Length: 154
Image 1 (cartoon, one colour):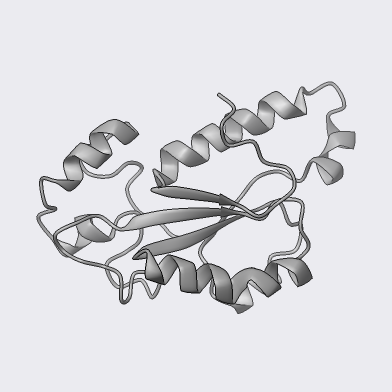
Image 2 (cartoon, rainbow, N blue to C red):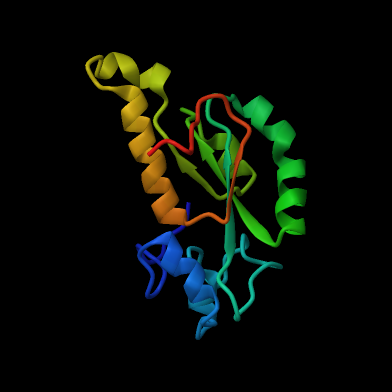
């Protein structure tokens, strides 16, 4: 995972973000957002005249062994589209993601967490968490390879 400003410079909503792309970021830090300018994830796709385009890749509901079979295809697709892939997982074990140096974010694993709060409306909670991820990453594309996501939910 990476650190950076909470929102891209001068942008708070996706619609203003895309309008801002036309304004040409002033420096490499702004162009690299939400990654650091020296992030290996931005290497080869970062330009100082446009913000990075993020591709969220939902692989929730899948185990690492299955996710790892998609890595080359996802990276090739993202590179062809000049995007940075950010994997959205609900894994309990992150060692595979870390070993591959992948950019990732998480959603709660419902199967593992449901017993902790049986009264929680898990579908609504997950929809809210996906909404937060959309606001955080402002993806140019969302690819759903997983089993659990409905990114169109409010």
